[in-house]
Image (tube, rainbow, N blue to C red):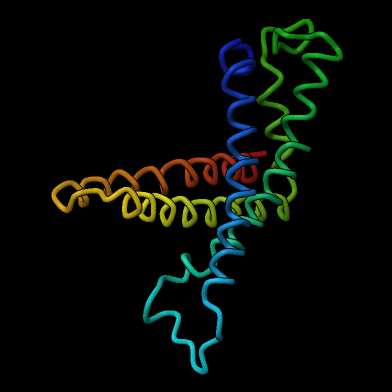
Length: 176
């Protein structure tokens, strides 16, 4: 992906703009929800009407945003430095046939606090995605006949991708 022009010049800007839009709209929705409730309940039994994740999307979103800042500092900014300032588009360590990415990843996951933060962030991302998929399916009115299949796809996606990234961080932490 680091040398694919479509990813670099088409998908990356779309992804960044999409994340910014999602972040802003998340806060707009949170503010609208707080205003709509009006009077606070004397006794709130949140767990009776909603999941923990649905009540805490803003918290998981803020942790994911903090993760994105750390991730950009760790990986994206150095990548832009190497590619566009240093002018090295190859991805290879000079004088070898080795890609620079492997050593960079190993180095980034030596610190147990950083590995823990990455793992926590991806667990919250998993829960955030799961709730997001379920809410999206409900919002667009997915028919009951295919709702079970869609739920299965949402669970697989929302667990497989984040836990794959957790595996990468833990693998490099325990094998350096």
